[in-house]
Length: 114
Image (cartoon, rainbow, N blue to C red):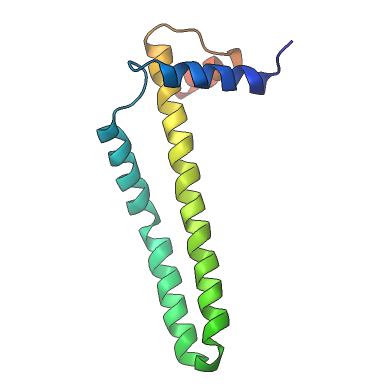
């Protein structure tokens, strides 16, 4: 007996293999650009914070730059996760729109979002 996670994972793999359900590169690039726009303020805040902290504590620049690097890594992780989630959601929407069966939990979520 398979778990809901393995069922969702199997459905995900099947979706990726069907070119009719896979968003094209233009859609993906558009999504990346949107996510980037949405995270721009976080990047600017991190840059501003670094600049201000360097001005206040120039002797602590190594630590401050490490903290900035960690903040930027976290922003990149957020962007990657947002992209993966939205891509998976789009795949499921396309699957549902073409009459393919979805796992029950995903089907219910899709109905609520409509």
